[in-house]
Image 1 (tube, one colour):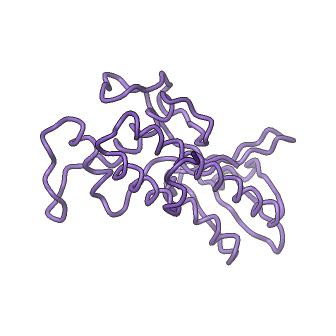
Image 2 (cartoon, rainbow, N blue to C red):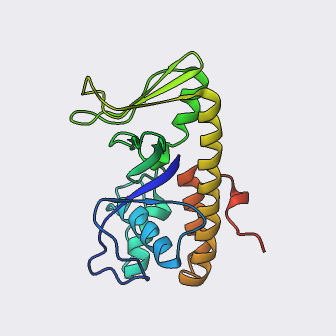
Length: 210
């Protein structure tokens, strides 16, 4: 299970270095990313929230960097396309995050494990769903297809995978804190605090170990 972020080609972006990527690729988030990949992830998260302020938020600053970061730093409910990807290495089946459950909703998986209610991630034409049958979890790649590939695993296995995904997100947050201290020194604390809030992680994960 990997936390992933949907990204796109950064045409003309020049506020900080970013990696060359294909549009609509999924970037796995962890502590292993290069500085340019961290820059790409932060570009995408900030861009998803780069929406003109309404009456509840302060006006957009004139400075290009401050303007681009404005939504990230002022929105109460941040969002970004992505989620948790599950791959069955024995069959090659991959369960991808859908359009209706973004990366910010990754903790929905914990609620699903605890209460067993059906968890949907998208809608027609692709509707990934997670269902629990006792101690077994079934992940259906596309519920719109009667013969859709599925992944089955135990609740214990899923809890273990979720713990690993949370470690990956915490490592990504720590890596981003270090990246921001070098690339966005004037915004480091605010950016890492916003990212911690977006990922629903404790503040203790914001700073890398010395």
